[in-house]
Image (cartoon, rainbow, N blue to C red; front, top):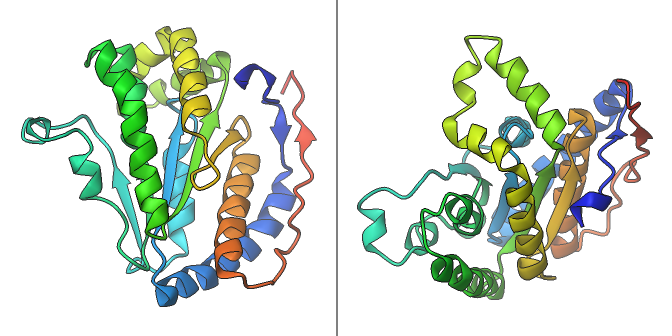
Length: 254
């Protein structure tokens, strides 16, 4: 699946600057409608280290009312959290009615990072798939809108971004040992990602693969997908302005 993704998708900066304010304004109105309608929204951001999850979440949050939008960063389970069923800490972080929550990585850590680093055993991460499917089904049955994004970049692009971050002492800290290990085991991670996408994609909790080489294309695709999902639930009937992104192929020498 991932081998077929066109990572040369790109969007001109001028078009990005024209489209973004329209999407942000629309999303602001939709977030207000979600709040009034008491609809919970869970937006999961997964992807390769340095693929742009953090910057995309920052952009998403920049024009939203902080009373209705919350960011939940997921780190390894703490000692106290390991004493409970593994999904317990995520149940404590689900969106309230009318709230949008953006997850900077999520419960999928169990079948990706924990799996590859062997933090848990094979039986545990295999069983986690059923736990995740049931967890998301319960959320959806309760009315939660679930969107899951996988930000995809190549191993070569990841290495380039790591070098750029490490060259600046103000950003070098962003490349953690966990990120280095992921890069080293890129192929193993990709196999795990493929399985994750295949086993947990569902109409009520769809995976959206985002070609993340070009940050402008990445952000517009994510914003459009969120707007469309909220519009669909709210049945506003209002079309998304300039909804058809016209991507250009990035030059392989760019």
